[in-house]
Amino acid sequence: MTYKRLSPMDSAFVQLESPSAPMHVAGLMVFERPAKAGEQFVRKLVDDWRSETRICAPWNQKLRSPSRWQLAPVMEETFDPDLEYHVRHLSLPKPGGERELGQMVARLHSQPMDMRKPLWECYFIDGLEGRRFAIYVKFHHALVDGISASNLLMRGLSESATDHRMPPFWVHPAPEKPFQMSAARGVPSTQALLGTAGKLYRLFSSDDRLTTLRSAPKTAINGAISAQRRFATQAFELDRLKTVASRAGVTLNDVMVTLVGGTLRDYLKEKTALPETSLTAAIPMSLRSEGDQSIGNSVGMIYSMIGTNIADPVLRLKKVSESTSIAKEQILGLEPQMRTPYSILSMLPSIASMMTGAAKHVAPMFNTVVSNVPGGKKEKYLRGARLLHLYPANIVFPGLAVSFTCYSHAGFLNVGIIACRDTLPQMQRLATGLEDALSELERELGISPALQSVDEAG
Image (cartoon, rainbow, N blue to C red):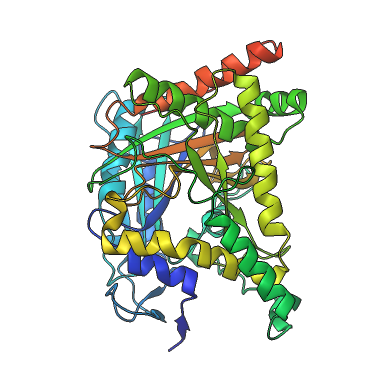
């Protein structure tokens, strides 16, 4: 039997698991049925997948001990997973619109995983209007980060609409982690250690230029959370966002962080709860080497202001771009072998406050998470069914009640918003607020709003 000890970063997600804050992430894939497919297309697909006995890592791995109270969790192989448990078939109530889909996904995302079993679940969701169906796949964060989860799902799809034999996701093995020279350099130099220590000190201090872990104000979206979630989605044509980024001379990621700042500004202002200083966001940053498609977590974290204190959307975008640029310099200025230790150490106080329950009482180290997972440009198919959108669903933590995650696919940027149900009533407005923030930014930049977003909110 093969065993695998989890890395410190992967282990943290096992240790953070709790009834009010389950540590799983998910992807909601919305498909269009093939033109000639009948009403039983999804049922036949479910039956076929459940009969597939081939299963590869990480789909066949489970925790040797399901307890969160362990310093070094170990994964072991299981050779007889219960696919009837892991692959489920659900149907939406009529009319099968985005509201019904969003409510179902919110309920599914609220349910903790059984830590005694392989740490994934797959739900086929039938009854979606417009000849569509959805697949919601849930992974424990100890197994994957956004990039590795995307790679696992994309391996189970085809680039050909005529490919009707593609086996399920779990038949395709994940690549091993490639050899990295930085990992073979041995003990880091004294200069590297001192440089890392200096940057960590700066991150935990007050700094006029850098957004630090002392920059976040206390807000209505930070505090205690409950177990129930809300889920909403929005999709934008990538060309529309790239036009804004090009006109303003910033990155596409800067645009998305600015849109999050705009929608949170309007949301908190409406509730008369907008702080005078800007909210801040933790922004995951991939630390993978080129070609690394292995499973597990390999991310750093940068921190940026999101401009909730700035009314002018163009000025907000400029300040966000400046903030993210300085934050990137902070981590990219480190030697490569020190970037992961720096990221882990920067997150330790936040992890400790979550594990001890202090997070709901103390000032937040950041107010939200804005993550952008790169996808592909080509169309993807599941036995002839075209993938229309893939919406990520992230985690909310104690003291951090809302998270925004983006995923690009075939000309669209798909945004999944996950939030604590009790802390963020009327959370749907955050999804529509992203569109309002983008339209406002286009007007101020003199861009014709010829391209419109695709509202998939639920």
